[in-house]
Image 1: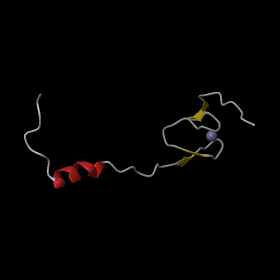
Image 2: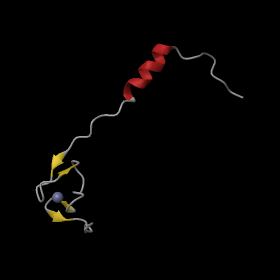
Image 3: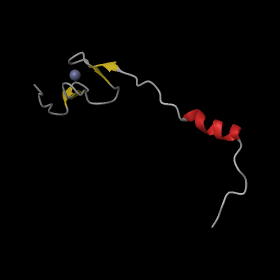
Image 4: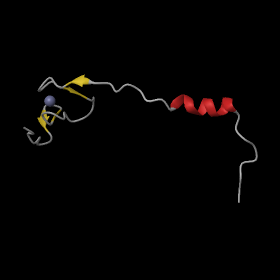
Length: 61
Ligand SMILES: [Zn+2]
């Protein structure tokens, strides 16, 4: 079985993990219904994207 010749150093492990942390999601405001939505995504509350109805949103009561 192939195996790594050397154990990675803790500095190398930590450098790899510098990209592992999660970031806070950015949000923007829907121009149609003023709900907060993610940029470049269809609005989850009204289904609009770039001024047009892109999805039919079912109403949950
Ligand atoms: Zn909307």
